[in-house]
Image (tube, rainbow, N blue to C red; front, side, top):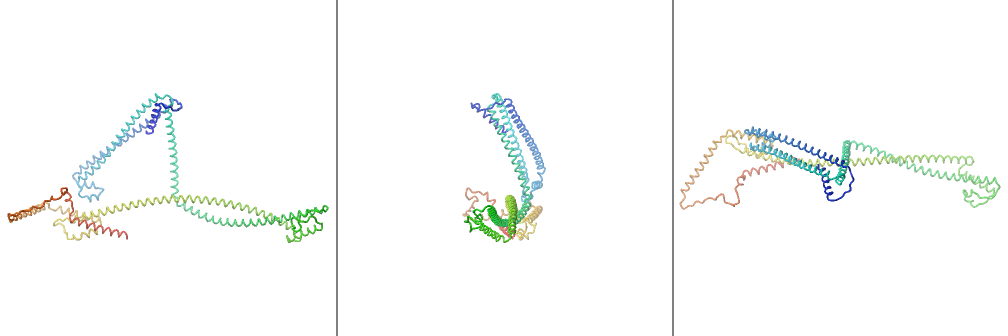
Length: 565
């Protein structure tokens, strides 16, 4: 209803603005569509009004039913009150049925007091009834107000239908409001979806929290296993790196040697070929290629005789023999072939080592990824553990607060028990000090303090009840009239003797003696009153109370010492 009233208020405001002369841009819409929209909104308003009527009627029926029940209950209570008006003891037992301690602590409760309690309950119920009536009246007034607003809106709607022909600023405002409502609905749906998502997350976290301990233990074992495996792999990785470096250096050394041997062999073969070619052709002066590569002492020679060339070949052959360690040409060739095979084998080993190195690198990257995943999972689990720890700490703090509250309540209960114990002791002393002539033997009156100190509150209460029953039995056999007559006779006798003594004294006084009147009891300040003198405690009562306070303090100190032990 508030949303409808706000919409209509915006419409009325826009109508007022339109009446003042302001112009708004609008888009033409069919009149029938506008009327249908307004009718649909009116139907919604009617539906809300009917639902409000039904709720109001239902509340009224429930209130009437409750009033009827309360009236019946009131009549029953009044009947019971009239039925038990003569039996005071039964009324007291009924009134303190669930409060036996109050019944014992309030032995002077009268029927009038019980009736006042019942009347208070009836007054509370009547107040509730009046509150319900007031609520129903307010709802009826609100309903009438809504009816008047509905009539006003119907009149305004008729005026709008007559005034607005086609699309105007009012319809534009209505469309704006509808768009706002749709946006609000979308936001509400999104909010509900987010709420469901968060509730699902909360349920998932709750289920995970139930299996948290087992999961953490399993993860701990997995982390330990992975750490052991990682340490083993790290040692293997370090060994592999050492082997790789060693093989790499060895392979590099073999490659350098092989390259040097190959280069030297190629140079020697090329020089021999050139020498053979030069021998086949006619002798001509030419440069010595071998002098540029092998011989360091013959680099500057430009021309050589055939004999000198032959000697040069002999020197090369001698050097090959010195290098290879063989004297036969076939052995030298086989040696070079073996060196070639060794180079091929070294190439294969290099390829194998490269492949093994790539495999180990890939394995290392894979292990690094697994380690990173394990580390991420460990961090997540650690965060969850910290959150759970915070939750447990908050629960512990709440339990600590509850414990403090319970301790405070326990202290209050102990104080109440102490007050009750003092009251029971006071009642016991009062009952013990009551004397009925020739009815009880008071020879054991000196042991009263020992009984009070040694007895518990329950024992004292039992003794109080026994003394009360005994006092009641003594009072049944006690003759009040006879005792009253004796007291009246004693008082009259004392007064008579006092008057006679005064008359004799007056006769013996000389004539010139003047009696001094005693001071009046009203001497004092005019503002003072004697109202509080009647309730002033006596000296014996003050002494007894001080003794009780001292004894109670001693008992409390002894009890605290026992508790500390």
